[in-house]
Length: 262
Image: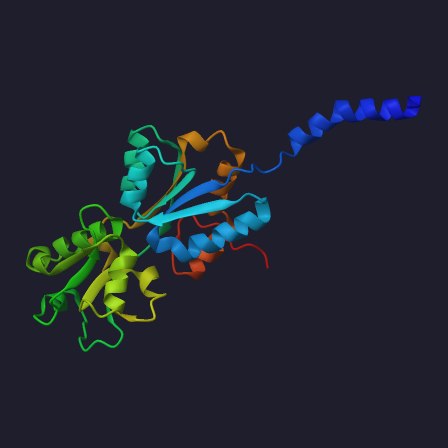
């Protein structure tokens, strides 16, 4: 080996580590994004966009926020958590499991009926009509959409009379499915869920003042704080690119960044 080749080899051995440090390759280990079932369409699109831009793989876990929070509490591997309310983010934060958090999205409650159903509803009081024998909600004791629905019905003085008719579903999408299949006469879901349901129609919207503000919270899980890709995913969910997708699917984007340039 001549002197020039030796110098080139020495230069590479000195500078190559610095280049790698400045441009770290994405980790081969996938990121784990836990997200409320009602955000499935948006989260799937945003995750695909993030994968294309970052080169990092994203695995989705989609279920009721209450179930996801319990999984995280039990030690399930999660990097980022998108909850359909702030309560479950609060609970994880109390347990010391949240590194960063923000209020990301807003939503509305609507009453839905089967598209081919014979019942027409115009106002919340109509839910008490005798032909509404079954009313589908996400579990009103733990699942955000059900908690909000119970709050609205309590504020209207309807909860006690309607409670015997409630069919509690595991999450908001299961409640919506019961309506679409005609297994119940009506249901209460988010407006974003109703918008993508071909087998259901919106009967009316509930006044926002009937519930606490409907807010979807985003959290970076404490154990993921040391992973640059996880922080990047957390930030990406609040980016203009993600906001554009959320808006397209009917969500209110809080502290909304402008749409990305076309």
